[in-house]
Image (cartoon, rainbow, N blue to C red; front, side):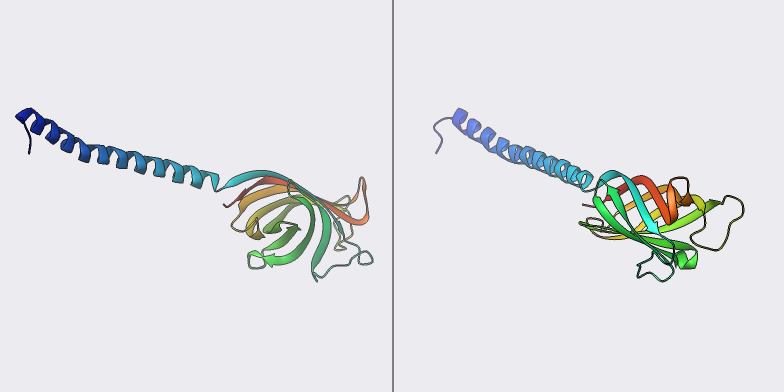
Length: 182
């Protein structure tokens, strides 16, 4: 079989290296897989800094909206493009907040919206077309299309009538970060 003891010893050392080589290769393969899957999970979420600007007709004569207790508007959700939106008063948080739905070509975002710090020139009135402004805080609670599984918070303000805003119209400006899932 082996001509010399030296040949037998050399053969055994090759055999001994074989399992060690397999173990080293397996360890590298496992490490590479872990690194790649870790990178994939990091890349699976993407943060977007967003800015939203909407105009909503508030005067009954200007409204063409399917939401009974709220408004419908148009504008832009940057960087996602042109948007339509609705605000349904009292429809979120068990009646404690509003639901804003923003639709762009690639999906729909649903946000629970809280209005705070109302300000009115003179005295506030119940007329929805009266001059008023206030702070808005919107929390992403759902979505479809690219917004499925999204999270995030937007803050901003709403202003109705006055300054450069025509009578019977409100202007909504929001900004913040939305994180999209894979």
